[in-house]
Length: 172
Image (cartoon, rainbow, N blue to C red; front, top):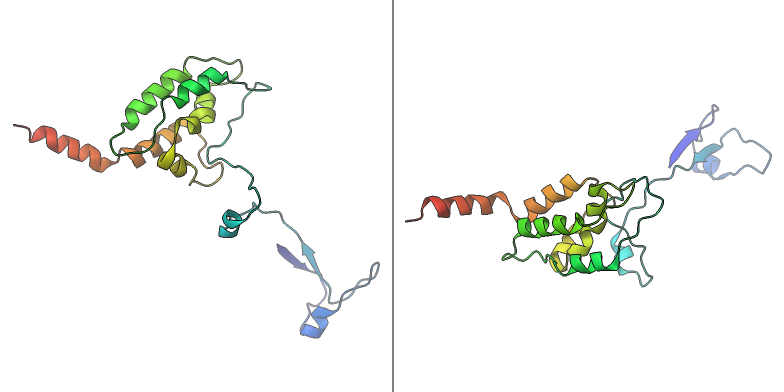
């Protein structure tokens, strides 16, 4: 909210600021309020509300040239047969490889490969991994490379790589 004072003198007392001008009249101490729309913040109250919240995604919808995008249900079914839960024994590289392989089976006119991958990625997640991807701000993940980097950083951190290298180099 921005407040802009009229060129005249601003109110000095609560009495002056409490007076309101009548329609069509101006007042020398009148302060004009201009509303500026800001993005809505999600609060804890929103999560505890009994009303159905509006769905939002942390993955931004990429702009495409196609009027509509329709995915075959069998494609979504294939993706959901390869769910990644974020468990320590799961391999995020294998999941991404399989996911990309499935996404590469479809081509849509006017829709880039990365747009297909971005729009379907949340279908490939379940449990902790799905909660993790939804923990980002709305539309904050804008590119496929960004999603891959964040996923691998979360589920295959540097420490895991270091452990693997140490295990290989100390093998007898």
